[in-house]
Amino acid sequence: MGKTLDDIRKQAETLGVPKTGPYYPYIDGDLIAKLLAAYGLVATVWKESKDFKDLPDVAIAMVDYDADWEVGRCVVFHRMRSADGKTAQPYCVDSSAGKPAATTDLAGLTPSWYIGVTQMQKTAAK
Image 1 (spheres, rainbow, N blue to C red):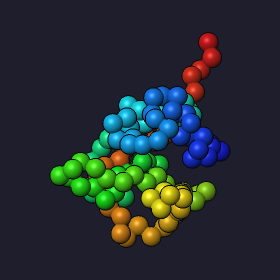
Image 2 (cartoon, one colour; image 1 turned 45 degrees about the horizontal axis):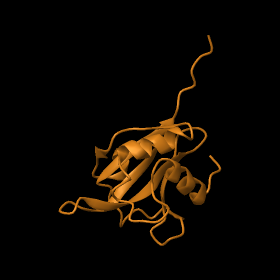
Image 3 (tube, rainbow, N blue to C red; image 1 turned 120 degrees about the horizontal axis):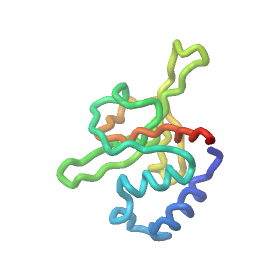
């Protein structure tokens, strides 16, 4: 995709998200779907999960979920497959420290909810 986090934030602003928080009243599944569609991606609705093995190869996963407050923290999950498809390396990109960082150590993370992400299908020319 080749977009920085700042690029995505600017795109979100065009969809109504304020430049500075709080963001929680604005970011929902519909906004995420619109933001991803602007970059040729399709989002599913939020789905419940218990483990990363239940997620599709690319997803936005909510971890550290508090059911009482109905809030959590989101990470980008990717299951990178080998060219022959025989092996896969799952990892998450987490920006909770303010700077995105990738980790393959998923032991402390449990996804409670996720949005699957796929490429938008190209329409056939008529």
